[in-house]
Length: 77
Image (tube, rainbow, N blue to C red; front, side, top):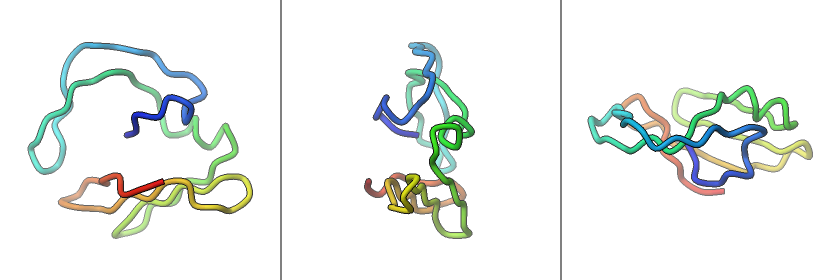
């Protein structure tokens, strides 16, 4: 999940409903898309047991998420 709209090839904006995270906190749904769109834009997405890494086409890390309570939490880009 990210607030950076440029990371999506196509983003359908919504202002309805909530999502419940693995730690039982909730967040408002503002839009949706699928992670495969990142791959379509040339990014490589790699999930590991403790983190998620997203690389650009040049092999640079552009986003890191840390796995906490079975969810990936955004750390930095």
